[in-house]
Image (tube, rainbow, N blue to C red):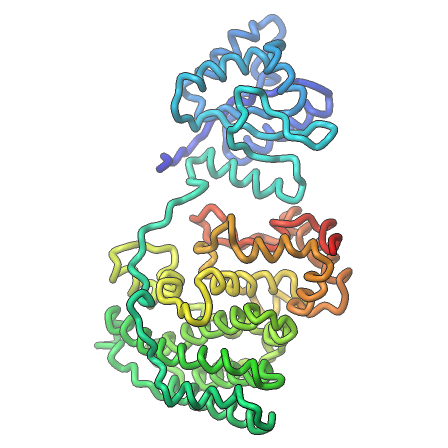
Length: 486
């Protein structure tokens, strides 16, 4: 666990090199100072006639220095390996200190520029060490933010709290055999008209059960009872699982996504009309939010990208206190999670960033999708708001991925999807999700948004006290590489 540092102080070790390189180093140092970090830099600290070796040694060994930033480039690497020049002197001092420590966090290698062949250049004594890479313009901001947060003592990689045993470990199916037999009728070779009628009926029954469920026990003396709140939500899970069972069979019905979208819209309307004096109805709103994420996960898992694009791109009718308005899928996003968050935190004696998402991933329906697929669907909803065709953020708000902190950055589905966008064939399929008619329109829009994020015209979303923001497809692939492979 790192200690928070209110006023970090760093020493920058670098090779002077070209005038351009010196100016880049100055600009970097000035930005750090602007972000609250005190910087020791020879150009500011040394006057003519000063002893450079003594200054370097004192700076590297200064106990008030929280970190030494080594800006690595071909010139620095050459001088460090040959032990000549200022960079060579600093490298000798740093390497001697490194060899005397089994674990170190003070010296931070930063790849500041590469050689003519695009290779990373590191001095021999730093071979095998992890580094920050500032050479890619598309990931520069992410790397810079990682560095700065680390300098302030914010954990770059935070080990999550040990969770509860997932409910699915010992769970048995809660769907009756009669219900399964009913839903299996959709798979049979019967007229499409009959299938559609049956699917609508089954969905109406699910909506009826959700709306009519008695949850009065969650409120006592106008106060939410946390234990009853969790119990009631667990009972709603039975209805969620029935819906997911039906959704898995709905793929055998033509244009099923239109019927599913109509169901979600109608359920929202019924929940809104039900109302609640003391907001115990937030349970149903949270359930609808969760069901929508599962819906996205289901269509993506089946690779039904056109249907997925329909669900995400459709205009929905939203009811509010004063009038009826056109909206996007954002209306299924429940903006109030406080009750379930508080209930889960009280139950577990923790302060989870999001008790709701914690509850969702702990109680995932593994028969329908994996935790990773569920989290991906939530992240995809956020990405659609940035990259989808026809979405106007100011009109609808954004979809904040509640569960993104449970995304495995190294093997995540959003990362895999993004990397595969280099394939022209895959890209041709995926543009259907984002509702573009041709590849160029989609690529140009991704580039536009990525540039606006880089210029800070669009703010990235994420938990303020968490290191990572919600991942975007533009984080993992260079725009110019999209669609360049077969």
